[in-house]
Image 1 (tube, rainbow, N blue to C red):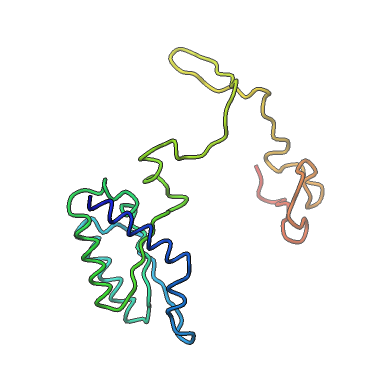
Image 2 (tube, rainbow, N blue to C red):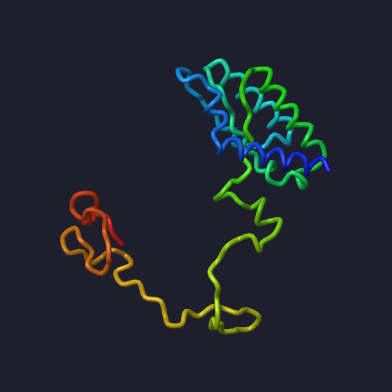
Length: 182
C-alpha cells in the first residue's frame, strides 16, 4: 500500500510541476536553479552521493532538484527500504531548503514502464509480414526489398545529394565531405 501512496504522490507532483504552481510561488526576481540527480538512491553510496550533490547545490544557490532515479517509476520493484531512502533524501533536501521533484515519466528511458507491461510500448502494426525459417530461426524478409539509394552519401552533385528528397541548406549548412568517405 505504501508504494501506491508514493506513486500517487509522484503523479501529483508531476501534475503540480506541469501546472506551474512552483513557478507562481517563486518571487519574480529570484531565479529557479535546478540540479539533476540522475542516479539511484537505493544504495548507501547513492544516498550519500545525493546528499553531497544537494549540499553543494545549496551552497551554489540552487533551489530545486530533479530526482531522476529510475526506481521512482518502479517503486514496488525497488526493493525493501527504498521508500525509507526516498523519505531520507526528501527530509535532507527540505532541511537545505531545496525543493525535491521526482522524475516520474522518463520518456526515452521508459524501461520501468515497459518492463511492467510491454503492451504500454507503442509500435506500428505489422500485418502479413514475410518470415523465412532456417533451422530454428525465423528472419524477417522485407517485402518488397528495402533499397536506400546513395545510403553512403557517395554520389553528391556539389554539396547536394540528388537521391535524397530533402537536405538542410546544401552548401551552407551541410556539405559533402570529399576527403573522408566510405
